[in-house]
Image 1 (cartoon, rainbow, N blue to C red):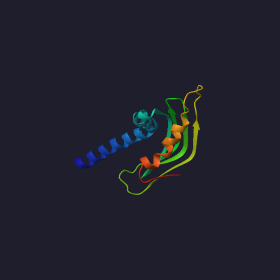
Image 2: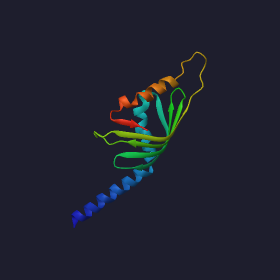
Image 3: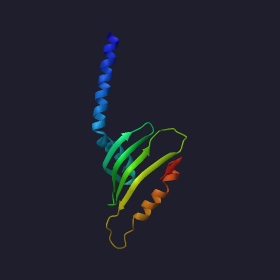
Image 4: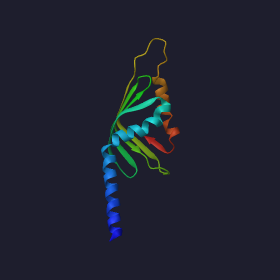
Amino acid sequence: MKIARYVVVVAGIVAVLAAIAWVLRDKLIERLSNPLLKDYGITVVDVSLDALAAHDAAISYLKLVHEKGTTIVIENLTLPYAAGSKKSKTYRAKKVSVITSTRTDGEAFEMAELIQQLLSLPANLANSIFV
């Protein structure tokens, strides 16, 4: 009888924590992602997680801002996250918009660097396919 009560209490606590995490999921993603993206000068300013599956996440809206002002908006992103899988991972997005910042004459245009980083993603993320 005591074991059954213990299991019910633990299950209740887990359910409450899971519900809180789901409600705060977008803020949690921002807080976890921003320190990882800091080295690249990118900040997550808006995100909307729709679903978590066994091997991937469905993100309906993701807005990233580079420290130099460029904004990247990604819509309907499928992001695989299964760790240690030998199977290739497929990244999909329905729409990607890049809004460049204004610049002064003679200043380097950061779009070239952004494109270079994008093209290097398959090499940096082994077993990946970008669609």
